[in-house]
Length: 152
Image (cartoon, rainbow, N blue to C red; front, side, top):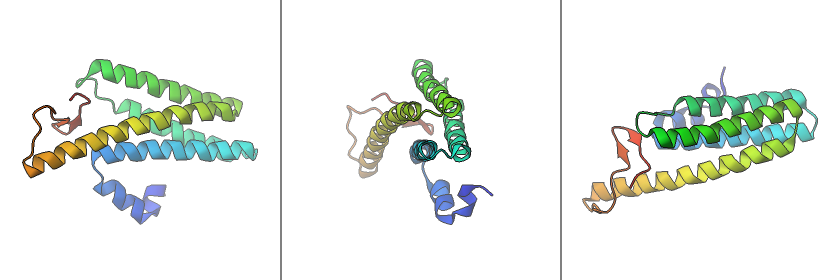
């Protein structure tokens, strides 16, 4: 049974989250698993570190696979390169059991998460302005057809 189905609160959070919130949850999960793997390597629990790093790698692989190149090819290529760096760094950490590699990956993941949080805040502000009828003509919609755009 997966962790999501075992934890009803997590299951409900995932089922009721917006796509933007789900992306934040993925970043949080990848960071959490990487840090747990880091702790396991320090404790020389290589079985646990392998499991946790594999989970973090799987999250990054899913995030990379979910990129929609039709919306903004150039941006997706840049994000894919970042995800590829994180993924390869986590693999190196897994193979070489190096906490420094995990630290590098987590540093980039935290930056990406922070950037995503800024976008989510901007989307929420735009939605709030639109629902109040207080549209700012200088802001272009950030979400169109259910897809997030970083323009605006």
